[in-house]
Length: 95
Ligand code: SF4
Image 1 (cartoon, rainbow, N blue to C red):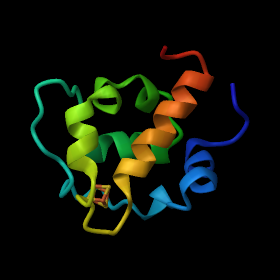
Image 2: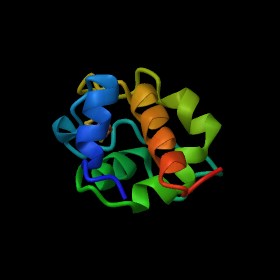
Image 3: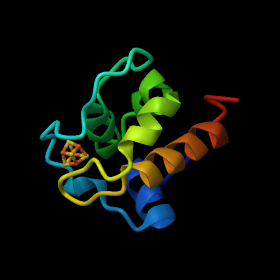
């Protein structure tokens, strides 16, 4: 397992600091292929919880498209999702 936290991995890869996420749910949209709301996914990642890497939400392409520009705090959720997908692959959690 990586010794870096998910927050640090995202920051290094995207310059986005997910500790700025307020859990406000403004980025949440209903997609049938997600299991948790996108805001919850970001909160899990901020807590360095590997559940974030295994969530169906992370691998939903419709959520990925909708994520662009959806954060009211200015976080680039599209970039953040892509970096989390990459980390999941590196940890062998996804093909
Ligand atoms: S809109 Fe931004 S700040 Fe709000 S829950 Fe989503 S990621 Fe967090």
